Amino acid sequence: MLEPLTSLLSAAFDRAAIAIEAGAERRQYEQAIAVLLDGLADHLRR
Image (cartoon, one colour):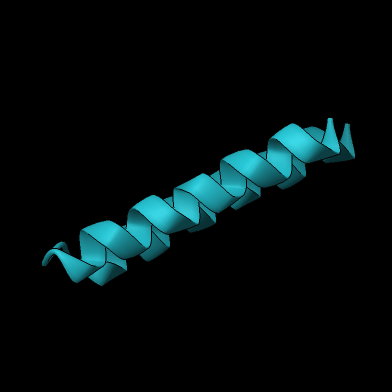
């Protein structure tokens, strides 16, 4: 399970960087990635 998770997280960070570079608001992507990581951490704690 680790390889698919790292691949998906990497893609999320790549997409965020591309969107920010294209003019999207950085703070929104930072918040979205924080929510993603918090949810993943909660799931892994179970």
